[in-house]
Length: 354
Ligand SMILES: Nc1nc(O)c(N)c(N[C@@H]2O[C@H](COP(=O)(O)O)[C@@H](O)[C@H]2O)n1
Image (tube, rainbow, N blue to C red; front, side, top):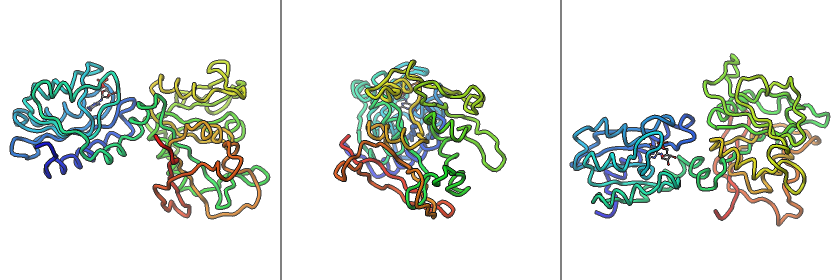
């Protein structure tokens, strides 16, 4: 059978669900889910990857299945790894367990780990690829995008009024959006590996940039790295981002290097963040830094919190994105529109070829 059976399609849907349980805890590793079917097509094992250094999804599912995996099928959201990294090769573990068929959704783009499908085939295991590929890709988009591009998956978050203002004419901006939206942002912070801001935001707001519970102020267990893009090293010694509550990198031009405008080179910054294990990042401000990231083509997703307010004057949420005429507009596909408290949350992705 060279196509997935209905039992395998159902098992892949379940594996995608299982993979999602690892969201926010596996980085720099992917989220992966696995279901083992016995020779009769019944589910005998389930697993997901929970944290880097922990067992891979296939190993968890095989442990549950035990002897029942023999003659059965492994359904897995990512190609079984072919390497010894923090743990052993999953392709070999599946062969050793006597699995005769592997159904996978997405090939592994990590050059160190790829090749599991070939190893399995060479051992006589039947391998079917691309099953529910679009759904599995969506569930693992940050990691897949980061590994394919060699830079973190970047989400630009902004808050504005309906007329696109991020502050009033006198500079006051607390609080444009509702508490519900601010809580939502803290939840979003908890899912990424880094939060990026410009030094202007630090100087204006002295934000802590931690992921926390807004009701009691308690910090989330896992804190993203705080990254301040600070070409000239103006972050004050007493700034809250230096409080030790989370790892912090003040990225200066002297350390990172400069682009043609003499500012921190954002492409180099992103490459360096990837090298430091950052696979997803949230860009939180300000408008000029957002414009620079957008015009460099480095933004992968946009989450805008739009408050039902009008200001009529005051700074825009976005500046200097390299758009001079309407035909240069950065075109987006809106993927979700949700109500968060009284606000609208609009999620969009740039239209682009790759
Ligand atoms: N197929 C598969 N299942 C999992 O559960 C995984 N975590 C992976 N990860 C791949 O292996 C690399 C990490 O290996 P170590 O945890 O360091 O041993 C990761 O980058 C993926 O390519 N694959």
